[in-house]
Amino acid sequence: MTERAAPGRRRGTLIARRLVQLYAGLVLYGVSMALMVRSRLGVMPWDVLHQGLSRQSGWSMGLVTIVVGALVLLAWIPLRQRPGLGTVSNVVVVGLALDAALALLPVPDGIGVRAAFAVGGVLLNAVATASYIGVHLGPGPRDGLMTGVVSRTGGSVRLVRSAIEVVVVAVGFLLGGTVGLTTVLYALGIGPLVHALLPRLSVELPAAAPAAPAPEPSGR
Image (spheres, one colour):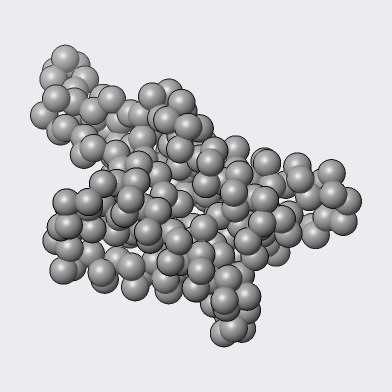
């Protein structure tokens, strides 16, 4: 009886590990976004759009992030993408964590502290991204948009990713979003950082439940 129960316990432990890592990663993602916002040295590409929309609408940046994520998720329908638990959770949890972190984090004055916030935000974002991708519960809505467009058009991942991010940065900048050194640092550093961290944070799944291939990170 003990031997029969063992596989069930292992499955339960695996599910718990994946859920804890998923939600910890999403909360840390929101915190990393807040660090970059507070640095006032630029934000990651999609957050240029979120910040610009927040300034124009008067909504909190977290609420804008949730609304944009939901709209992007609707765009999955014609692209025939299927969301997972991680996808839906990403839409809600990241925005809530962002607003909570912005309410708690101070606004630094010195350039040294601001730079530390920026670098810390990028590094924490890489850990958070590898954490939630590594549990194989569905990509973020923005990553799914990218992979969906690649699947439907046959274009390269890098070309489609770059095109989407150029558009969101340009629109966000025109709306008042901040583009700066952090934006460039994130664009150049996030791919290699996640690539190095993902093998360490990926959860090995049983052979009967193969993991979906992880998309190249594009800022959710």
